[in-house]
Amino acid sequence: MKDKILKFKKIHTVISIVIFTLLISYCIFSLPNLHLSAISLSRFGISEGTSSIWNIGLFGIGLMLYASVWKNIYSYFEDEIINKRLTILFIVSSIMLLLTAVIDMKHSIHNITAILYFIGYTLGMFLFGYKLLITDFRMGMTSIVASICSIIFPLIGLFIFPGLAIPEIVHTGFIFLWDITLTFDIEYKNLLKKIGL
Image 1 (cartoon, rainbow, N blue to C red):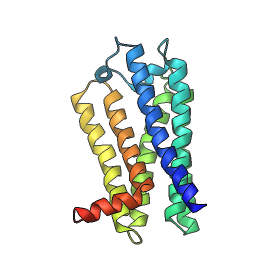
Image 2: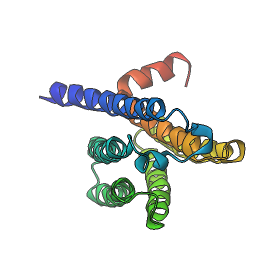
Image 3: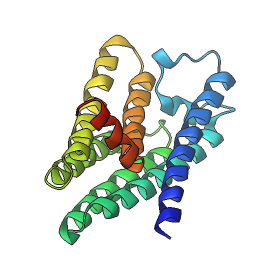
Image 4: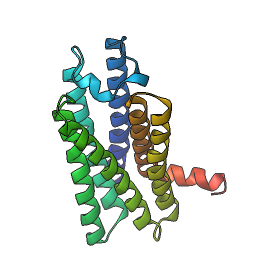
């Protein structure tokens, strides 16, 4: 049974990444006049030809991210207080992402929910890693580094590109990278050992 759950976790993570990649690719090819370097990804949510698929896709990714982080919390922590606090933080962050998908960028609250998702999810990753340091140092440090990188690199992108799309993709990339390392933790730890970490 445990092997089936582990297999499901791995398939779930891969499917989430594939859906996000296909979603971005579809929107880019459907709207060739929009350049990622100059727009926000939310622009796909109000553009004719991509609005429906983008908003539905973003909503689905939000649900999948929550399911993924929920399984990781209960896989790595036995302390019910830690589980509860992390779960609440990620629930709120996931709700913010879902609201970002439901409320398009024509409304100012869209930006508020997007920022709260960005801050909440990143903080959740950091706290997840911090609490994990005692029992699993490698995975704890990986989570902390991933959370810091998911802030620093998008911020650098803000100074390079006039739009938000590329920083948003970079942030999402680090979330998926974090999820991959937690899902394929045995393989990841073996890789770290081979390179002396």
